[in-house]
Every structure is written in C-alpha cells, then in structure tokens.
Image (cartoon, rainbow, N blue to C red; front, side, top):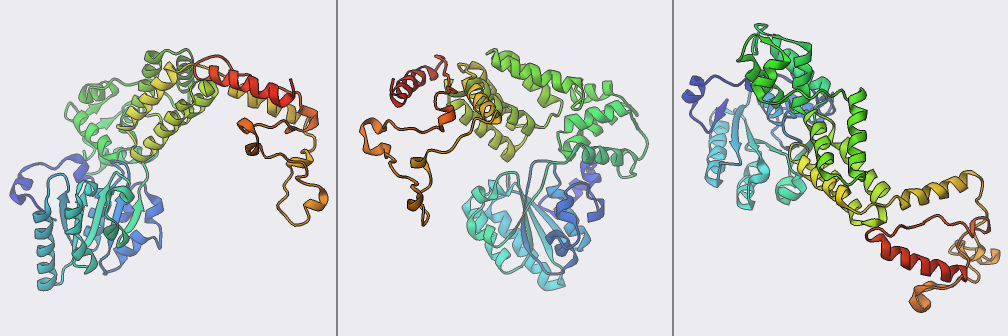
Length: 433
C-alpha cells in the first residue's frame, strides 16, 4: 500500500486497532449490505478490471476508507491515499503522474483515495479531472458532506455516487466482538464483559472506528475489560439508559415536559443524556418537530421552522455535530411562548368527523374545472375573495352540519395574540355577526 508518507516511519509505528481490523475482502465488511449485494456497482467494480470513479458519502466511521482499501486489496491495485485536509494541487498531480507511470511500465492500476474530498477547492478538484476522464486511476472520494453542494459538477457527473448508512448497534457489536477474538486485534488476550460491550456500542454512536479506538484504549488498562475500565479509559461515565426499557420512556417524557414547562436547562440535560447514551438523533429530532406544533404552535410559528431545520441538519451531518442543531431547537422550543390551540383545533375537527358530522361540500365551492361541471351547478355563485376589499367576502365555506362549530380557539400568548384578534374579526365577519 502506497501513501504520501514515509514507509519506514509507518513500519516503526504500531498500527491502531481500527487499521489492523480493516476487512481484507467484501465478505468481511460489516454493514452496508445495500452496497455489497450481488450485482451492485461496488461488487461489479471489484469483479471488473476496468477503472472507474466513485464517491462514498456517509457519516464518520461507516466504512468509507475501509471500502476503498478493500477494493484496492481484492483487485491487487496500488492504494494511494491523499488527505484533502493537508494535500494540495502539487500532491494530487504527483500522485496521478506516479499512477500513470506505474500503469505504463507494469500495467498495474492504482486506486487513488481522497479522504475528506469536500475540503478540496475548485482548483484541486479540477486537477483530478484528467485522471478521471482518461481512467488513469480508479478514483474514490470520501465525504461526510453532501457532494451535490461540495463537489464540482464535472467531477460528480463522471463518477458514481454511493451513500453509506450509519452502522446499527448490531453492526458495531459485531465489529467489537471480532476485534476481541481476531489475531489481528486483541487475539483473545482480553475479555470484554457484556456490560462493557454494550457501553462501547452506545459510546460509538454507529461509528465503527470510534468503537475500536475506545476498545483499544480500554485494553491498554488491563485484560479484564469492564464498564469501569471503559469509563476510565475514555473518561465517559456509563449512562444507564436502555432504549427499549423504562429509562427510554422516562427520559423522553421528562425531555418533552421540560420544554413544555419552559425550562431550557432541564431540557438540555435530558437531551445530553439521550445523546450520550446513543439514542438515535433522528428520533429526538422527530419529537422536537412534533412539540413545535403541539405545544408552541401559532404562539411562535418560527419554532416549527427551527425544529424542521434541525431535523434536516441531523440527517445531513449526523453526530456529534448534529447535537448543536438539536440544542438550538430545544432552546427555541423551551423559551418560546406556549399554545396548544393547534392540537386542540385539529383534535376537535377530527372528533366531529368521526362522529359523522360531515355533510355536503357547498355547491359554490365544488370543483368546476372539468367538462360538465357547470351543468351540475358546481361553482355557481362562488365569490372570489381577491376581488373584494381586504380579500374577504361573506359566503358559506363549511358544510351546514358544522357551520357553527368553533375549532381554532387561539390563546393570547406570544405571536398568537395578534392572530387571535385578527381571527376573531374574520370569524365575526364571515358568520355575519
């Protein structure tokens, strides 16, 4: 395996556990089954001698570097790794020139792996184009950011984009168990208690590399790896939290009730407990989005925007950075004025519908666009509100059975106060009061 660093220095430095445990073939790869099945592009790349270009996009620790290494190892190609954090155009061109020279002299192809490729500027990415277009190398770029925003179009259009998913708890557990027993890892020299194993799985948060780094740190303290040893090694207390047990429901309940009670500090505490325990951040984000309408609603309509934006950010970048977005949404929700008028309004409307209070849609509101609708009287007498002063006109909108029902009863809290005044005037005008 080639690199941009001195090989003698590499040999003198013991390789980290995460490096030693890299799979040697696709069958040893844990997780990403959607990319590794029969007939998938990645399988075809490994089984084919033709060079190609691809981007691996996914959260940290999901196996991007591992897959690039496996492709190189299985196809017997040179593996050249460049980090976009430290390399420049000169390094890129030197790696490509060496690959062309190797191809011309020996016929051996090269896998050019660029980690954190989104950090390359346009000029650096442009330097890759000739090698990709002319197939001088098999180019593999790894990124944690959306390549549609961070990679130039000419390079992206010439490459295959593969999305990697966060590893499941079962995946991380399998990675750790293999590292304990495999001769390349701890070789059975250490024992890992079931409780310590589960603590490492929670700490990993779907990141295989992180789980192996923590395991290696714990193994340095002794051969009997317990929860206490892991806590000491990684300086993180074990959060007693069962995602299928009482703690899960108790903590999320306290989290919601703290935001509802406007205690931002308490809500952040419960957020931290869930994040540190390895709770799925998408689950937390969904609960915040629900809360934004259920408990804040029209008292601060921007709260929903913040919550949705946080959910999208978590989906895009994952943890640990995503916890900042979640925290912002939590603080917004907790400190916002509160109103449950929205949830009461839809609840009352649904309740009436379930009771059978439905009725016919008034004729003047029915669809009049299709042929023959005019013969049925659809749309007759409809008054277009924009043709009237203030965009309001008195006419029946609701079916007769629910014409006098009142669903939305706004509070006077926050931004809902002016809404309440405006809605009261509108409703009085429409009802003829």
